[in-house]
Length: 169
Image 1 (cartoon, rainbow, N blue to C red):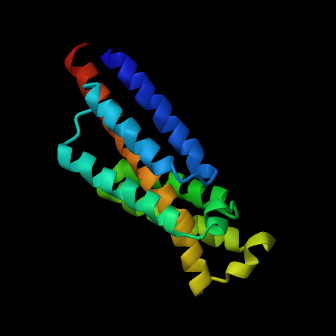
Image 2: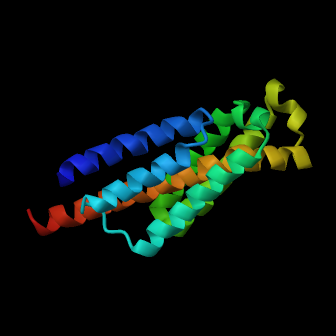
């Protein structure tokens, strides 16, 4: 049963990453559910405080998506750039620490948005402008929270598996 929960968690985390690249309101909550299932499986040692923190972050993202205009939530402009930057930043930050995972994801999403702004389709966002930062917040926050949750789960699973494999050769 524990292995089954871990497999389902892996599928949920993978789906959340895919959903981060196609703007979906449920990407962060799905990532959190994957994190929770991985913890409940017993294969992921994560404190209750961390689980609650990421639940609140996912709930905030979901709430903001419901407060934003539908046109903004459904817009796909620049999302692959923003989510791609957040993904790269999260993995680069994950090498250093959990805090750097978050910082790297935010910096990556920002650079992704700037890269999109440099394309003909994104030229109207004009960095630095209010419109640019509003769009970055609307599209970057869900990607950052989703990819941070996935990065933390992946990092802990890899670390704990490596630790256990060295202890039990």
